Structure formats: C-alpha cells, structure tokens
Length: 407
Image (cartoon, rainbow, N blue to C red; front, side, top):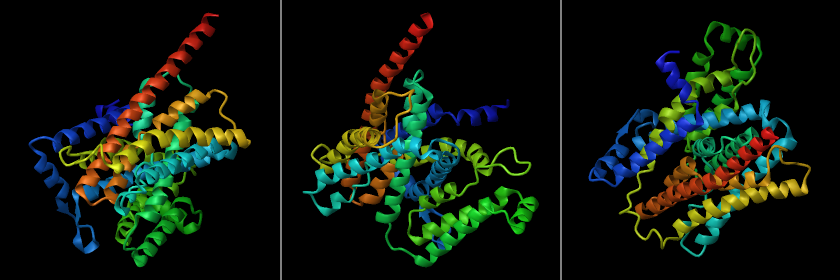
C-alpha cells in the first residue's frame, strides 16, 4: 500500500479524525490568545470569491458554509445508509436511539431557555447552541476508552448523533434563516430533484447518461450549483450538504462494485476528517479569553453548560429509558443501561455544530466569546466525564470476559 493510501485509510479512523479536530482546536486557542492574535482575525476576515455569484465571502464563512457542507454531506449520507441498510431500517430497533436524539436535542434547548428567559431577547437567541452532538469527537472518545464495549454501542451513538445533527439542521433552516430568496431556493430545490433523479432514476435517458459520462462528472458539478443556490437563497448552505447526502444511492447497479453513496464516502471522508472539520475548527474555535468578559457571570455561559452537560444527559438517557418503558422498543441485549448513561454524557460533546450555532446567534463579541468558551468547556468536561464512565464500563466488560474465558 502506498503512503498516500495509508494516510487516506487512517483518515477513515474515528480516532485520527478526532485527534486532528482536537489539534486544530488547540492551535486556534493558542493563536487567538497569543501576541499574533491580530493575524488570526485578519486571516478569518480575508475575503475571496466571485462577487457576481454572491460568493465574495470571508474565510470564516467559506469554512462554515463551504467546508462544513462536506461534513454535513457525510452526515446525511451516513443517515441514508442507516435508513437503507442499518439500525434505522427496522423501526423497532431505531426507536430507542431516535428517541434519545430527540430528547437530546429538545431538553438542552429548554434548559438554555430556562436559564436565559429572564435576560434579554438577544441572549435567548442562542437556544440552538447546546442542541447538537459532535459525531467526530464523540466516536473518537469512545474509540479510545471503549475498546471492550460491545459494537452496538457505537452504532447507538452514531445513530443518536446523526439524528441529533439532523434535528439541529432543521432548526438551522427554520429558525436561523433570514432574508429568504424564494427564486434561488426554488432553483436549489429543482437542482436537488435533478440530483436525486440522476442518482436513483432508471429511465433510458439517465441510464445512457451514466454509461456515457462518469457519475461524479454528472453529480459533482450539479452538487456545487445546488450548494451555491442554497447559499444565495439565504438558507445556510450546509443544508444543501445534508440534502445531497440523503439523496445518494446506496445500492449497486450493473457492474458497480461500490454504490455511489459508499464511493463518495470513501473519497470525501478523508477530506472531511483532514481538511473540512479541522479548518472549520481552526477558523471558529479561536476564543480570546480577554474578550470573554463576565464569562462566569453570564447566563449564556450557564445556559450552554447546563444544556450540554445536564440537558444532554437527561434528554438522551431519559428519552431512551421512557421509550423502552412505555413502548415495544427494547435495548439491544448486548447493552446495559449504564452504557447508555455513558453515551448520554458523551453526547454532551457538541463541538462543531454548536460553534456554528454560536456564530449565527450572536454578533456581540463578548456574547460570542462567552458562548464559544462555554461550548469548548462543556465539550471538554463531557469528554472527561464520559471517558471515566465508559472506561470503567469497558474495564468491567473486559474482566467479565476474562472470567468467563477462565471458567
């Protein structure tokens, strides 16, 4: 295997992607709090792109709406695979992680609102910040500390985090969209319909087109056009990434060895892990602690901390337990409720999408710094607490396995 292929293979690892994300975050924090901090803001504010197409954007915007769209494409694509081939194919098996995701999205938002309701309307605007979980970070932590935990726990976590992110994306489209351009939005919708037809259609015209032209040459440029139209419409362009991912075909046809969905994942996942998510973190995680005035006195800080550390656990664990208690859904026999409790804490790692919500929620520098600082602190705390809980569960499982083996 060539060195390039080895690097690409390593970037499919949850652990490697998580470590790159952590490295980019540390670098952003160090840069923003060093004597070179003015250059951090200068790089973030650097503009480039085609103004005629409304794409003359700052670098931070390219990272948030351009590169992060690739990450959301992977999220949508994974969800499509789960719906067709995985846990979400069977409604009874899917019910528990889906209920956990819905609870894990709703309860943190309610906690944030409860903490900030007595404050100004501006502060309340950040209610979407603690909603989402970060699959890259969470799965990386599980890969490090949960080596002896059963495989269904990773599937539960991935399904939970993916559905959780989908809820956040819907909130992003519904509540954080301003200045809607209906013409551009209609054109984007038409582009999505065409993309879906090229992916899944079986008519003569599309079959001949696939035979004459490589699939990526048909779908790739169209995906870029859909993304640009979504951005021009005023809807956050990451929505295009999710929608395109959900439209991917996951089954092979004819002489195909890989479906378009799995082929796209194989190509784009290393780019997402090595470039898209780390660069987004580098551009957004640079919280200047000197700018976060009144951090511990701010209701934004406590709303985010309470939502991500307490609300996430209550929503995930409570949602799944109540669903198992009052419906026909049942926990996988290889799992136990303490495992789900650990996942509930782990879901409090809400790095990527939470930072995106913070960027969209506050224009005030102090409020934005408080929100971002609370996201970073919550994510680090959730990672440490989850590592303790799941590490103990992993050790317990290993000891039980050794005892049964010795017996």
